[in-house]
Image: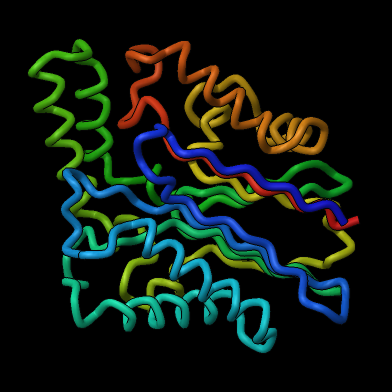
Length: 281
C-alpha cells in the first residue's frame, strides 16, 4: 500500500485551514482517510474565539478517531459524532449559531478486506480509480444554486476587474450565496449541527473494484474545475506518477499565470490546497 499526501497554504502569511490524515489500524488491510477544507470567513467574522484551523484540527481528529476505531458506525454517523464532539468543545465560549461559525467541507474513505465506504460533503472531491477508469464523487450542490444566484455570479464576473462596480456586484453575489449555506435549496458544510452529516454524498463499493483513491480540497481541484487544463483521469495519473506535491505545484503555476484573476475569476488568487493519494494494492 502506498500513502502520500501534500498540503500547502494559499499564502505563506496565513495558516493552512485544511486537514488531512490517514490511519491504518493494526490487525488487517483496512484503513481510513479524512480530508477537511476549512471555510475562511469574510473579515474574520465567525463568532468564534478559536478560529478555523482550530476547528478543522478538532473536527478532523475526532472524525479520524471515530472512523478508525468504530467500524460499526457509518461514516455519516462518524461525521455527526465528530461535529457534536467539536461543538461541545467550544459551545460555552463561542456563538455556534453564527452563520459563519467555523465549518469545513469533508471527504472520508474507509476500507476493509471486502468493502470501501466513502463520504463527500460540499466541494472537496473524491477520486476512485477502477479498472474501467476514474470516477469522481462530487457533492455538486454548490454548483447548482438557484438561477437567480448564478446570474449574480455571471454579472459580477463580467465587470472589469478592480472596478467599484465589480466589487459591489461581488459583495451582492457573496451575500446571496451565504444565505444558502446550510439551508434548504442551498449547500451544506460541517459546522455545529450534527444532522448535516445526513446531507453528505455517501456510498459503499466492493474493495476489490478500486485500485486507488484520492481526496482533493477545492484548492487542489483547480486544474480541472477552474483552469480546465486537466480532467479527473489525468489528475489521478499525475498523482500516481509524480505525487500530490507535483499536482499542487501545477495548480500554483496556473494561479501565477493569472494573478489578476481576469481569465479565471475566483475569490482567492491562491487557495489552500491538499491532495491525498492511497494506492490500495
